Length: 447
Ligand SMILES: Cc1cc2nc3c(=O)[nH]c(=O)nc-3n(C[C@H](O)[C@H](O)[C@H](O)COP(=O)(O)OP(=O)(O)OC[C@H]3O[C@@H](n4cnc5c(N)ncnc54)[C@H](O)[C@@H]3O)c2cc1C
Image 1 (cartoon, rainbow, N blue to C red):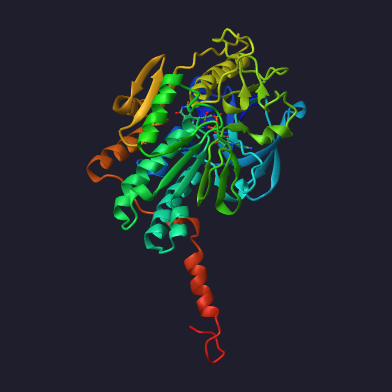
Image 2 (image 1 turned 60 degrees about the vertical axis):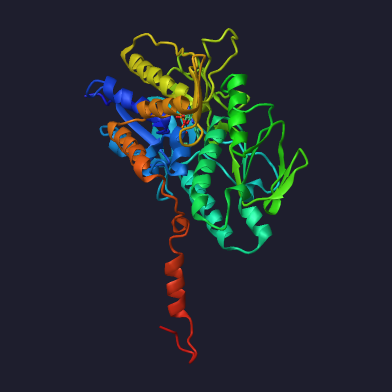
């Protein structure tokens, strides 16, 4: 019996998980074997990261374990370090550090994007991105622990620094992250006397003349006004010049100390793609046709944040689809269908989807949404944001868990406690071991 063709998917995120789920559904028994390789054992539903950071959602509920969701597929928790398409082979670093080669007949390249950092002095030391569940959990604990320290210190200068939070980048991801965390901190601070809400300073730095370029100018302006009403400083046409030693210097001349710099100023295609012989555009995205085939190949496909996919709905022939979950998931469905069509010798279809718009949660009961030109503000927008993302969340069990989190939040409100030990779990044990090992007053080890 001839061997089954091997389909390998690099990345189990929005595009990768959707591709694998659809392939599993569409392929006949024995038609092909599917392998998904991801550095993480789970898919992260990124649009829910702000709510996970704010404590409205349990972090485990916004990630989908790949092995559980993809029974019937091979799941490899490993890092793809290079793609040699000439040899139809990937180089993969396994969890134990060993390097292996994985061959494929059909390849789906969907490793997404990473935060696009700039060479700003101090950013690497002070900044933190907002794309992973680890970053969301860290930020929640970090913000709450700043309140804890601020409530106990008598040092006024330190207190001001601890209570100053800076976000750089005003796309919807940055705005949602900041709005949710600010809303959480404002709620939490009631339990932190003598610190008062007025002492907190939240600053959003945006290089362009408006925030949320994904929505129309009036909605962007509406969102800015709502944030400013809450006391958030929105600095437009402003760039960050330096964060050295926690001292922020902005292009408008403002300078202040801060303990919290969150970098949400855009994304760039995953740098792993630099180690591949696939064609890439000037921004590093994999060049694709509208059929999602990588240009110059017939058996390599790409989609999502890492791919330059023509936007067939635009009158501009050079227009590309924007990096969003909305496109990634829809592209993945066409990608999977085209892989099946390729295996069966059937014609492939084009990807065509008009960007529907954006829904953004801005903290409990507050939101801004613009879908197919229809604008919603405040509570209806917030509700739409929740309903839309709940519908899009993969697996029934995750939908149920998320709904449960939201319902529990109504009578019991948010749980605001910093679990700082998460980030240094061995500290207590090391202290205990060192204490036992310390020489006592008589020269022998104490214990
Ligand atoms: C805070 C936030 C809020 C957002 N809100 C929205 C929203 O409301 N609406 C919307 O449409 N979009 C939203 N987005 C954007 C959306 O999440 C992304 O566009 C989407 O995740 C892209 O999907 P993807 O599959 O290309 O990449 P991802 O979902 O990022 O998946 C890529 C996967 O590849 C894996 N990977 C990377 N490199 C390797 C490697 N070398 N080897 C193996 N595996 C690898 C990663 O671990 C990851 O699991 C938001 C993003 C953020 C950060």
